[in-house]
Amino acid sequence: DIQMTQSPSSLSASVGDRVTITCQASQDINNYLNWYQQKPGKAPKLLIYDASNLETGVPSRFSGSASGTHFFFTISSLQPEDIATYYCQQQDSVPVTFGGGTKVEIK
Amino acid sequence: QVQLQESGPGLVKPSQTLSLTCTVSGGSINNDNYYWSWIRQHPGKGLEWIGFIHYSGTTYYNPSLKSRVSISVDTSKNQFSLNLISVTAADTAVYYCAKDPTVHQLGGRFDLWGRGTLVTVSS
Image (cartoon, rainbow over all chains, first blue to last red; front, side, top):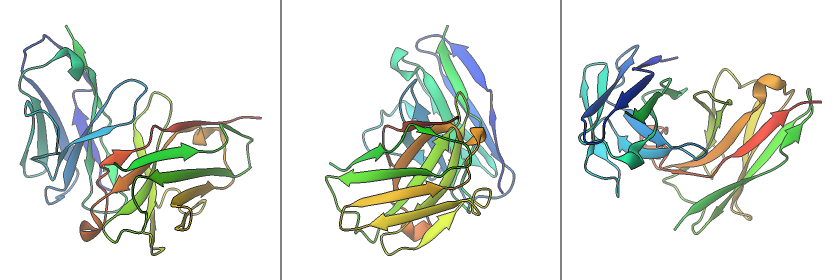
């Protein structure tokens, strides 16, 4: 199975801050990397697919990028409604696997 | 607007079979472009993919669960179902069904999720 190592596991930032989450794959995944947002008590929501493509309807302050087996998820200006846990997930091969999650809080 | 809704027992006894159904509304499950998936989340933990099915009957399962899991589709009811046999407390989780539009990539992007249903395994 492909291992997805996500960091940090949690972070605290102020409204308006730029926030970046990192995900490293244990092998090449051909940029088949998705990012999800999960708010407490809710189902995950797809934000970014194929490393850098914004899902329809998702605010442009969310973005994704890649460098080899390292993937980056950025919130350009943190908003109160962005409080959630974020997960990366690879779909290059079965079984699809998720990172451990990053809990984002407001300072 | 396609919507997904999980249903099934919230409590299952150890060694018995966990059975859940996902009802697809607002669209047809008979779509060449979609896989239909099950994903679970243990309490306070991360996400684990269980498997997915195409309306044609093609299935893919997580090898860690493959010996205990089966996913089926009922096109007449616009539903797909999960069966997990020989459950233990370790199968206690929130179970989600999800839609996957990446048949062309062999699956694995979940662009629409149900609300999830908590299944507790306990005697």
